[in-house]
Length: 287
Image (cartoon, rainbow, N blue to C red; front, side, top):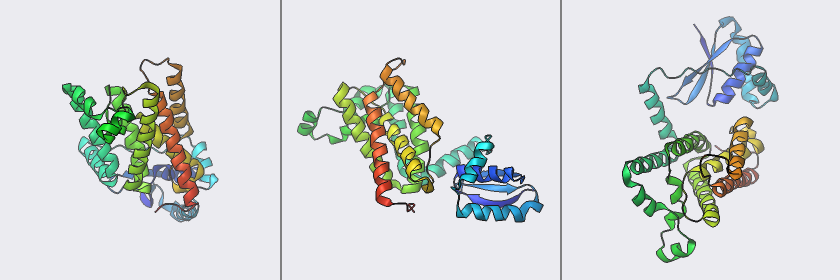
């Protein structure tokens, strides 16, 4: 029977440590515990326990040591974490995740409800209530919520799914690390600047959470680059994919109309927010 060795809160660190242990010929498995939002490394052979524990203690002191990253690269087959065996467990994991990241969950729920209402024939009244207007009109009617309103409107199932998946994944990570208040600020900043940029370029007929999504992508990317010890990062392949998608939008060769200005300004505002936070906080990790 496998012996529990160590509990780690982030999968990338659990995978790095597991890869290093395997490189030292110490077989381990990684087991997810969604209720506790952590990953348990299980030792397969008890005779390796003393040596494995010594390695774990060294890892805790310097988890970002390049030796662990190198081991992860050499063992490119990342640790397989078994999926929950039933739909009931999936729902439970989702509810636990929402409880731990309430603002992420609120945005997900709002986008889902608005998209569902749009799908059953209520798109026109929703658009009339949320679509952005020229600033001169807003100065007269004081409907300033319209500056972020387009973030909640989606025009197709693919558009909706793409955005909420990225928001759910990255938003929850940011919220766990920096708190709900910070994610609220980041959401407002990226939504505001991306929507204003798109309004200036194309007028008021646009919508989607994509500007915010590019904002959180930029935030995690730059924070992972400037402050890797804080535990947030994004694989280069994912960053490359998002940047290529941005360039394809400007090339106008995709089958959909892209809000290119919103994507670009969302990305820039997220990157700048990350840079300001990293510079202002020094190297001290957030609690």
